[in-house]
Amino acid sequence: MDKNNHPLKVALHGMEERTSKTMVMYLQGPCRGAAMVVNDNDADIDVFDADVVGIGSLMAEHRVKKPYRPVIALSLRDGELGYVLYVKKPVKTDDMLAALDKAGVLIKQNEHNTAQSIVEKSDNVSLKTFVLDNDERKKTAKHEAAMQLNEKGFNAFIGNVAGLDVNDPAQLGNANYDPKNYFQSHVESAFKISRELGDIMQLNSGWSPVIIFPKDNEVWLDADDKQLRAFSGLVIAHTLNEKISTTPLTFESSSVSRSLEKFYTMDAFLWKVACWASKGRYPNHIDITQPVYLKSWPNFTRLLITPHALRISALLIKEPRTLANVAEVLNIKPQYVFVFISAACALGLTGQARRVADVLIAPSTEIKENKNKGFLSRVMSKLRG
Amino acid sequence: MSQYKIIFTGPVGAGKTTAINSISDLPPIKTDAAASDMTKSKKSATTVAMDYGVMNLPGGEKLHLYGTPGQERFDFMWDILVTGGIGLVLLLDNTRADPFVDMKFFLDAFSTFIGDTAVAVGVTQMDVSAKPTIDDYQVQLSGVGLKLPVFAVDARVRNDVSILIQSLLYSLDPGLEE
Image 1: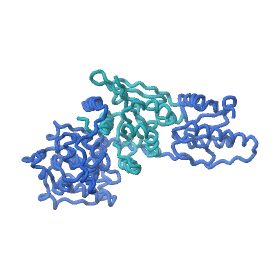
Image 2 (image 1 turned 180 degrees about the horizontal axis):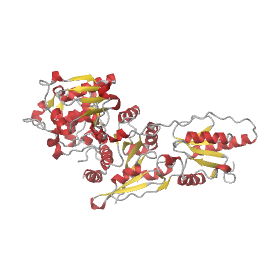
Image 3 (image 1 turned 180 degrees about the vertical axis):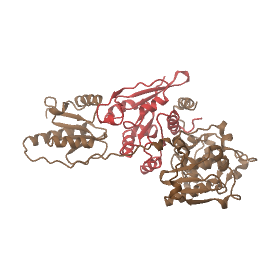
Image 4 (image 1 turned 90 degrees about the horizontal axis):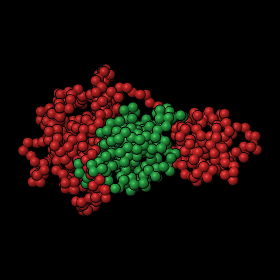
């Protein structure tokens, strides 16, 4: 085919003006003039962007009007319609030229072919439908941005244990806590039950009840952070344990209208409760002689960010390390590692390496510096400033 | 003086322009065109060339913020944009038909660049469509052996965008001090 002398005529669909102009240049340039863009009425070929909302019905409409006209679709997905020549995005010039060649062959066949048109069943691109939930947007606590704590604010917000210096290597053995002694373990247990049953449950504790909505990953509590922090930091094992229970919520109770700003995500709620129980200590089921790894990054924009939590995550996501190693490598106080591990453990985001190799090959106490470290540090200062 | 830049990418309507606007020290230079086709159903204007913003640092240094065109068609422009980039911010719209397909597409398209640098993923519109959840995204990534920062993001909120970029920078070097 002499592409320059006899370019194919294509009509563009699903592309706005500037995109169309770019396609014109693309066909002229990289595609060496194999096709030119014309009006719909003058075209031999239709080219659609198959990923645009509502394109399925537009393609079906065109198919009815022009049943013999070849169709090329630029798509992220593999093609489903038999009559369409699909070109996978990002569009490669060779693929585009191959599709145009095939379309050219089809045009010639159609010129000599009087066969009846076969109108394929319209397969609309499946469109995700959702109802804009105005109530969801009013759940401000659930969607609010994270609070980023720095070292100065740590003790005031997280608290500490009188008479214990968790940063003193000599006291490291005592720098742990048993979540079972705290509200944390009851919240974890209630979440587990609620998720397993898929039912709305109520955690009763003699304090404000916590209503758990597992399907929406939400809790509702009529208390502010100050009250929750105080209750989460109390050792309640010997005083309230017998009073604490998790019970199904009746349909009537679950249907009661609740203040929308008091909804929290389950993860954000448990994360905070664990931080306040920890007070800079690590949970006693962690063996501090064994490396710990992070299964995935926490959703930090919706969680309380304790000091250095992002750095700790970035380090542990790469390889398992002991808590002491993390503190040493990052040159930070162990309490910041401990509180992060407590919260991440509560959400099931950590694991402890049990392989012999992980223990035998001690991770380095140094990390490879990025070549742009100085610049990146200045960007970080600006972001945190 | 070296030129440093972060690239913002993602499908149409994911909030790239807004995110750059949230973090830039200057009003971003936009090259939006009025949408004249189905793109209109998503937003009234769409970015067909690129967005640009800048963070000014002490000493006159600058971090340039570039947004790729939303339309996946213009891949040839991406290659130009990523040259010299220090990392990628991928924004995904949780209301799209299949955000996982979008995620895979963009991670594949930028795989070479990501391999040399790092990527952080922000999921927008979660207050409109809560599903898929962030955990669902992590499961998808885990299936292809990736452990990336994936956060719920409101592109209008500077703090959200800031935390996303911080995670990107710490992925490049956890030794950076706070």
